[in-house]
Image (cartoon, rainbow, N blue to C red; front, top):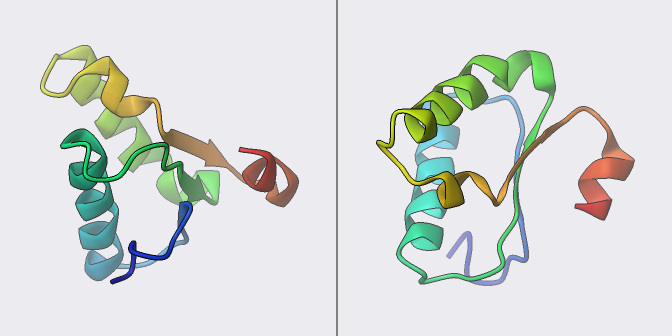
Length: 83
């Protein structure tokens, strides 16, 4: 239900449940159950290691480089809204 009426997924600093929702969104994007769905990691310092891990997965071909396309890392509210 979290994603049913959403146009984007903005991930704020959180815990395990937040990560669960993030990867659920990625799974739905990857399987094309949802289309054109941006995923924003908000607060660079908090999410930088997670972002780098996901990027490393793409570099190692554990996921496709296209799986990285909806992901955006920012500290800027204005950039988040534009994305």
